[in-house]
Length: 277
Image (cartoon, rainbow, N blue to C red; front, side, top):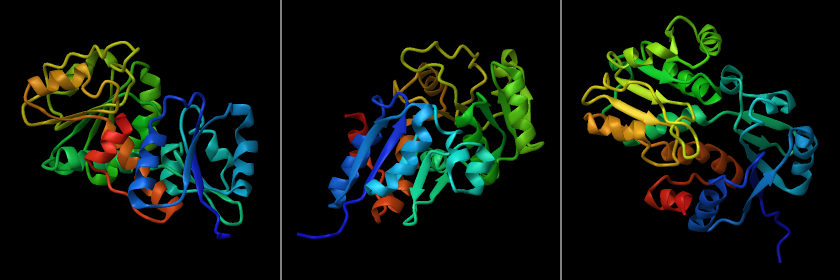
């Protein structure tokens, strides 16, 4: 027998039953031969702070945070990283030994790592990026692209005011376009990113004209159900390099797993298969 505590982690959302994170984390724990458990937890907004304050005493070392709690946890955490503050949301919490909660955002890291893996020839400095959508995921994408050195981001959203708020937070390298002009952005873009839920199973299709997509440019979609959205299928048919959204989910999970369980996992075909299982 041993007195060593088995570390616990999990994902908190409302709903959370759809999350692929438990399948992925269990795969990594097993493949690395580590003791630990990763648990999905449905927590309503009014219970969030009470639950988070209780978890460290129960042996939890951290949790992932998903919709609708990503913004609310910034008001609960005792420490917030600079990037989580800039993005305005957190997806990864680390519970310190003294019970204090540290909030971070690894979505931008996951997005860039997925691009590097799926489109290794893409150079951030090669030209502008077109970003569709201005929600929380878009903020993480925009922050990571600017940090990587993309010279200009052309941003559009169905509600222009939301796009303008995002642009005002990130400076004059972000230019806002009306949603009806979204197709025009693609003519000059070296990278096009769909950060909206349009095209996801159960959602409306992305109805932006895509004839401006050019051969050799990169197109990526944060949607991963289906893996190949109509947007990506069209981009591929026009000669673009396409990167699906599943890799972002896998890569964003790496830093949290390493902090919680002490080893850095590998994003490979087996990890993809585990997430899709």
